[in-house]
Length: 408
Image (cartoon, rainbow, N blue to C red; front, side, top):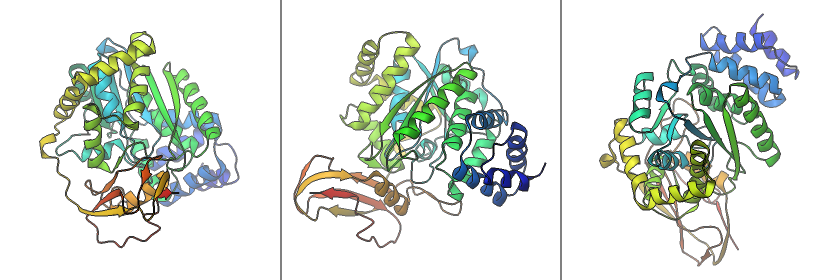
């Protein structure tokens, strides 16, 4: 067996066996296969796809590349959630504290940004001193005592996904249903939760562009979850416009904190939906009863206090958060109704400002990003402020860069 034959086989659209997938991906993890060879295989997968059987096999190979956490010692139902990636999607930072403050434990393994979509790990690392690299002992202890823990993959936990995930981002091979499913489900299963909610984002600002693909992904994730005795539920949500009025790591952390303090916005509504589903399933109560618990947790500030406890437990220091960036104002060129805010263009702009990266030579500027001041449907007048841009880069913005807003 050799990697060239495996690449050529997938380039012809043929199905790879478990053994062939294991040879290729384990070889890459052990550095016996080069980046350029794995990039070629990943591109062949992007172009020709994979069957469900291949995807399930690849998920299993990812899981077996490291340890699987056994959370049974906690003695409670453990929940988890994941988003397939979007713009301004900081729901984890809102949902985790809400769920934990309602007495349901949430264990999460998160990833970094992929393409133009933001990553929860990047957002957490923007908080000074926050530790995303927890040992198994630290992971379990925080889950027991705080009720919400969020960690990155380590050398022990799904190390194959960590390495492949980074290569996908660097090689333009992010938009593949089989690769997305294998990446997400391997992390979810390895982290040990009993109930897993997947928020599948669909639209121009997401990795998944059509509802047909989203439904296929939903079906595959549920089947894979069942094969590992996990309860997987999915929701499909729109990502043609940003979920939050803040895009960028520190800006999104601040926005999540404001939502936990009661700010009414789209991010709050999506977070309420996800949290109520998880609580209702874990506690075996109705969704309406769960939603009442969610609203009480926010109103009483219990959820916000849980967020502070979560950050502190992983070494973070909220008091040292400071956004240091130059600000540029984007104004409306005409009067009318704001018909659309293009999430894809917003994501591309945030990337250009420094909020993300497309290769390992670049560094993320945690202060970079965008604040939106108008929502779709709002009346705007000429010269009204539509957004402020935060960046420390010396860049010239073209009309196309800021052409994210459609006013008619």
